[in-house]
Image (cartoon, rainbow, N blue to C red; front, side):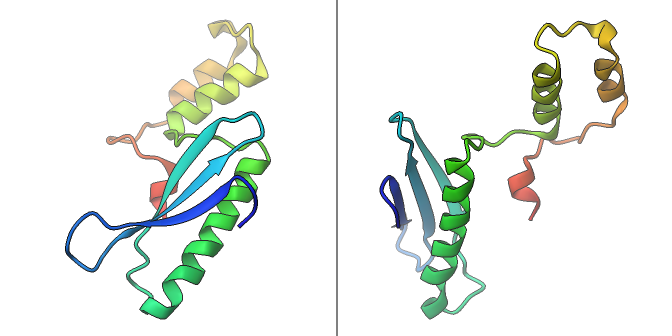
Length: 114
């Protein structure tokens, strides 16, 4: 792993399962943490490599000023409209188009869709 990037394993119970965790520290000192999952579907000998691959992909995302938190689809759309027009007013049209989209019954984040 590179400077400011860490991969760890958190085991909270006596069961064999645990969670792989990636930690990132940006040049400005801000920190972010992401739970990568258990990788139980893989043999034990392949879990570290899979976790390291997932962590490297996330570190690359973070290094490109990626989002530090998960967001729902609605939150992502609202941020996009705010980015398009910082002085956003409901009359700009984007708001009405986004309001017409169906919203999920339960708020979900894209990271949990896979």
